[in-house]
Amino acid sequence: MSLKKINPTKTKTWKLLEDHFSKINSAEIKDLIKTNSSNNYKISWENFIVDISKNRLDDKALSLLFQLARECDIEGAILKQFNGEVINETENRAVLHTAIRTDGNEKILLDNNDLVPSIIQTRRKIQEFTDNVISEKIKGSANKAFTDIVNIGIGGSDLGPVMVVEALKHYSSRLKTHFVSNVDGDHVLEVLKDLNPETTLFVIVSKTFTTQETISNASTIKNWLVSSLGEESIIKHFAAVSTNQKEIQNFGINPDFVFPMNDWVGGRFSLWSSVGLSISLAVGYENFEKLLLGANKMDKHFRTSSLEKNIPIVLSLISIWYNNFFKCETEAVIPYTQYLSRLPAYLQQAIMESNGKSVDRSGKKIPYQTGSIVWGDTGTNSQHAFFQLIHQGTKLIPCDFIGFNKPLYKNNTQHDKLMSNFFAQTEALMMGKTKLEVENELTNSGFSKENLTFLTPFKVFEGNKPTNTLLINKLTPENLGSLIAMYEHKIFVQGVIWNIFSYDQWGVELGKQLASKVLKEIENKSIGNHDPSTEFLLNEYLSKN
Ligand code: F6P
Image (tube, rainbow, N blue to C red; front, side):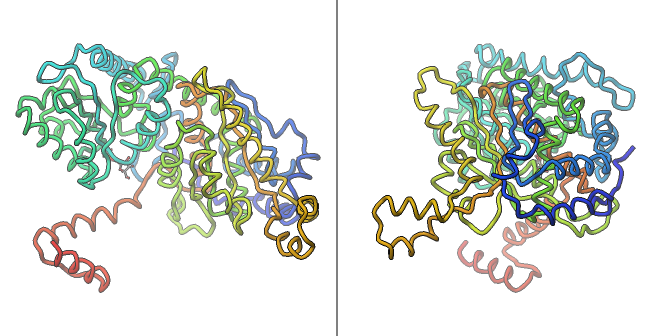
């Protein structure tokens, strides 16, 4: 059964939300926070505290948003996704990335087959391979232990693993992990430059095994390897994660080093599958499994909590409130840990490839806004970069602040400093600084009347900038798994309400098709029919090559 096709803007609740929005759109968070029933604005779950009280919301808006979710059949949609219904209609697929992080105590049926045994079997294969590489049982062709792993993949076959490996660096195994993604040959050569072929294991990750970037990089690497270790080294130095058995075989990969993928797991939701092989190698299988179990806990929370206490649902409704009523175009994610520096880039694919759609589930052009633009960087670096615009710019940018109670190093003496910034920024964004406060401050600092009058408007902070605060106990593999799964479910809920298909990505095809046509023209040194600008640029390029 497919997802219902409900235009959210035609629901009864949407109209009520519009009416209510017109009444409260200029209300101040600092006033709302005093009158709102605080219990509705805090969720405490496992190692997470989610505080949504610094938002331009009141109790009525919040309850209408839940009503909207119900009217758009969010509860039915969640059941359909977890039950393996074909909710990715344009690709005729079920969406079951949640199945691959099962705790093993359930049956997950797809076409009457229980998926769990094969999922566990794949996990055992990942575990055995990881243990054997780390313990030096599996070695390279020169009989030397592997010291370095290179993940070759792009999009979902890169962004998830690279983000998690960086996030869990503290838990690293003895292996060093590198990532090659871009078809830019300089990228692959830069990575290879410091590697010893005798001690490097390459993991090719490509669901299709036809992606231009990945296959080009894999071929370049294969030539590099063969030129120093000979043809017979291929079988020892490459592993592959893919659904395309034929191409894997053609590449010459050892069948024992091949890991399966399933078509019911989309690329950007696949880090939990064999795509996470590099993660397992980088941090050890036990930590990889903890990551999966953390995600599984969030899945259970998402499936069973009431809408009002359901973290992904609450966050997605707040985001819809800003996107569709306040007309915010973007939202920022600011993790207060350097380990999560790749989270914004990962979320960009997850969110924007999923919900960047302008046709609804009935195939009609959408007259309202869908997927928001997500961006961000770590605190406190971002405070010294783009926070000026968030505090005093003309745009309203809701932010998620993610912080941790505990640092990872026992001898880290700076954590209070980091966290004081974390707390202070959300307070400053909400409270701002009034004209009177600025004037008093300048008077007390001895400014002349004339200078004070000139400077005051530049130093005023309007405030009323919304934030969600996620305070997590510690950056462990388990909590990271829960955090990522939380954002995955947020994406799904928004897609359901916006009446779009979140699990396809037709928008990436056109550019790919054109690029292969252009490549042939460049190789043949004969430019075909293009618009005048492209034709000029291509001729310019050819004249220099
Ligand atoms: O960017 C488009 C996309 O199809 C992603 O969804 C996917 O993660 C990526 O390309 C890589 O595809 P593959 O794993 O088949 O190489």
